[in-house]
Length: 196
Image 1: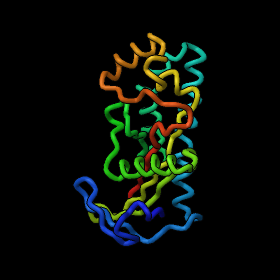
Image 2 (image 1 turned 45 degrees about the horizontal axis):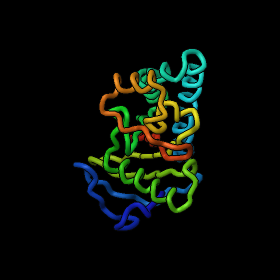
Image 3 (image 1 turned 90 degrees about the vertical axis):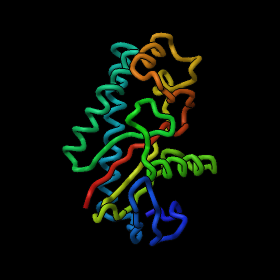
């Protein structure tokens, strides 16, 4: 468990959104739940990247915008049903209005940015925690998603986006905030949770 994100310590209380969260004792690196969370969180981005690359090869980057708009949420929903984990992607600069982080996710994303600025590699950044929420326990896990070269066609500098990509993004996401990334920047994170 990464307790350095909780300023009040290992057993501290933290007000997060409208819920009271209690951090519980640290989980070992070899904990089966952590192993499962890593496996689930790692599978969805890889599948999405495969679908994106296939679509780009068939119809170019503009056609790939629909993959993130339509297929990515469907993939997350299917994986959630299959695994028992609630899965989604979040970002500090979201494109999809449903990708706004909650308070726990926001703190993790901000911590990921601080750690990257201090020299840690974005691909290694994760946060996991067993929390008490509304009278029950929930396991939460987040893994940073670094920007890859393929992402720049839709998430790079606004001036560098192809006109058809910019038009498609604007049509689907008029309040888009997800441009201006470079390779290696943290684009967001995969976030999963499971009630216990």
